[in-house]
Each structure stands twice: as structure tokens, then as C-alpha cells.
Image (cartoon, rainbow, N blue to C red; front, side, top):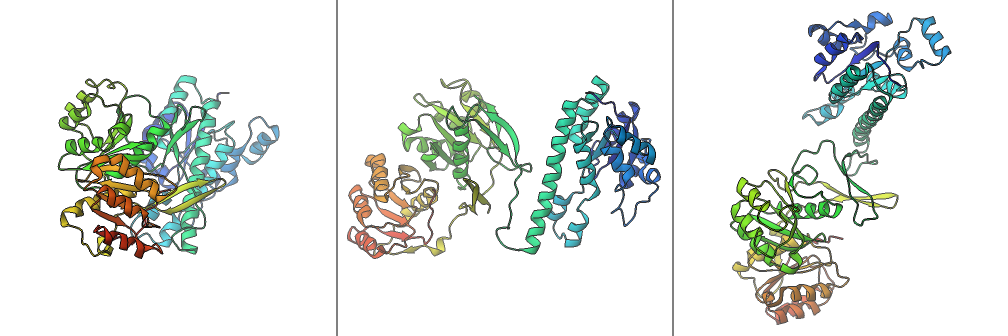
Length: 521
């Protein structure tokens, strides 16, 4: 059913695009009623408008707190046009029908985010009449169209001009968006109030809003449906805000791996490249140039790097593209701040996978900031501080008789930075600021050590070893010594620390305790 609006009620805080929208409504013969600041704005724009207060016979009062809360307004919105009793009530009380309600709300969220915002400022920006108007119009969408954001103006005008009215399909969509709009608004207020009455790190309730970006072909496996969502305010460099320059549609697993790849490289100041396979780094390196970092990262585990996802913290240039275009490589996706013209041309024309590789431009990277991690449980949610900030090296302590050579410190720092990105039990071997061996996700730490050493092969000799948590037994030290590992960095904290230290002293391997664990389950 198409409705042809005869009368509109307009009361908005955000006046973006309003003047032209209202002009077009007037040209289409729609009578406009408005309140307070919106009415003055439309009058100054030359749009004929009628005053709500004059219609209701009740003036605005209490500094605008009471404007539209009146039966002649809500009756005109909520009346069911197919119910004789509703029509009789309208006629009896002189109520006009409003077929189009254009309302957006006081900027509560922007107000509380403003430096120096007082409690009184926040309270005054809690809209009362606006949400009531929106909900009333959305409830009665069978007869009323509700518009809650400037982005909807063009679609409404298009239907009015094309269909000489507004279709039920659009009215339903607008109603759904309206209820989402008021729900988000109430969530923001509830969250703010909770912090006032119960201050603390974790509020008593959590509310979430994510907007769907797209549906995906499938999830982790073909029988699973999937979609990707983003926070409405998401603007910074991230996987969900990245621009895809070329390549096939992104998969669920691609997005998980791209997130991990980006998380690693943004941790480093120097040019860095990470190589992700099944959400674990199989290669990573920092160097004086991105091209060199990429070459070293791919060399960390060339077999696993086939079909991997890469992350980079510098603009991809021609020299880096030349490394990526070497024969024998197959890359699923690359995420980087940008790709220069020559690099983009090479990556999309030279290698065999040119048409398939996904190239993701994320913009200039920022360093990690404190935030929360969320992990769903069945009918619940785990929340924790993200483990994304660098450790304080002043807390590190050499616990062995041997001191690490200063030449080993860059590798120890690199290994310690990388081990937090590997699934526990995590062991990494590093040499020349590149990963040469990784042991991930094993049930015993000594198994992870053995895997990392096997992956490194001859490169284990002269490397350094990082462990995300303490060694429960000295057996891992014995394996490290046999492989020729030169230094170890780990949190410490085991009841057998003294045995582990003694094993290091026996093999003259310096060891650092950081005092901080980096499990990644």
C-alpha cells in the first residue's frame, strides 16, 4: 500500500540537508508543522511552516522540555486510518493526521564525549519527546513514514516523485531503522548512567550495536553462514574499514587472518611484515626497508607461507612488490597502509595469482591503544583488557650468571614482541629480527619447543627463544641448548624456576625474566 503524505511533522537536532528536503516536500504539496529551533530554521530558509504550539494551543515551556507531548500530536501520528473509532476520535477532538514524521534526537553521545561535559549537560541532552515521536510513527508505519536521519531524505523524495507516495516496503524499512535508532540512543544513556551510579572498569551491563557491512559466502566452513559487522563509529585503520583495491571476495577466514596480520605489524616502529597462516604467524620480520622485511618474513617458513595472508606497516612500494612477484609464491591477501602506483600495477599484472589476490588498503596505521577484547560463550560473554601494549623493559631481570650480549637484545625484543601473537603454548625462535621457528598451540610447552626448533632447522643455532609463559620443567632448556640457542626470554613464575635457571647456567645460556605472561588462547 502506498500512502501519499498530506502533512509532515519535522523536529530535528541535526539539520543537515533539511532545508532542501523541506522545500521539496512543500513543492509536493505537503503541509509542514514544526517546533522551536527547527521551525525558525525552516522559516529562515524560506520554507512555509506551521507552528506546533499554535496548532495544539499549548505553548512550548520549560526551556523547550515540553513541546510535542500533546494528544493532538500523538493522536495524529498513532491514529489507525482504517479504524472508524480512531477517525471519530480525531474528528471529535480536532486532530490532524500526520503521515510523515521527520525527527532525529538530541546529540547525547556527542555531548558526553565532549571534554568538560558536566552531568547537567548530559541530562539536558536526554531527548524525551523525540524518541516518543519516533516510536509512535514507527509503530504506526502502516499509515505513517518515519525519517530519523538525513541520509534517508533522498530515498523518501525518490519514492514520493516516482510513486506519488511512500510504499509499505520503505515504511517498514524506515520503521526498523527508527527502532534501532531509539534503542541505540537508550543504550548510550543507560551506559552513561550506569557509570555514574557504579563507577569501575567494567559496567554492570554491556550494550552493543554493530552495523552489517556485508554477508560472506560462508563462515569457517562451507556449511556455516556468515556476515561481517562494524561499529557505527568505526573510522580508524582496521580490517572492517579497509578498502579492497582488487581481488576475490573476502572470506571469513581471510578476515580473521588479516586482523592478526595487521595487529602484529602495527606493534613495530620499523618497517615490518607479518605472514599469517591459520591465524598464527609463520613468518615475521622487521628491517630497514619494507622490501627486506618482506623477504625475511617469507623466508621464515617458506612452506607454510604458501597461501598465506600478509600484513605490512608501510606503503607497499615497487621493491616490495618485486619480492612478492618472485616465482613460487602464492599469497591470499595483503593488508597495508597503501600501495603505490607501480606496486599496484605489478601485483595485479605480473604473478600468476594476479586476479585473485586481495589487496586491502587500510590507511596510515596508529599504535595500539588500550581497549577491550570480547569472546562469546554459550549464553554469555568474556571481557578483558586487550594485551596489546608494549611491556616495560625496566621490569626485565637477567636471572642467570651469563648476561645476554648487547648484540642479542634486538632479537630478544623482537622475539618477545612476537610471542604474544602465537597461540599458547607459544614458543618462537628469532634471529636477525625475523622469525625462524614457531611452535604454537601445543598441550605441552616442550612440544612447542621441539616444533619451533624443527621448523628453524639449521637456523636455530645462534637464535634466541621466547616463551609466552614460564617453563614448568628444565627439559625445554635441554632442547634449546642442543639446538644452539644463545639466549632465552620468558615471564618466569614457575615453582621450578630455580631448576630452569640452573639448567641455563649449566649450558651458559643467558635468560631474562620479564615478569609478564602473554597467553593467547
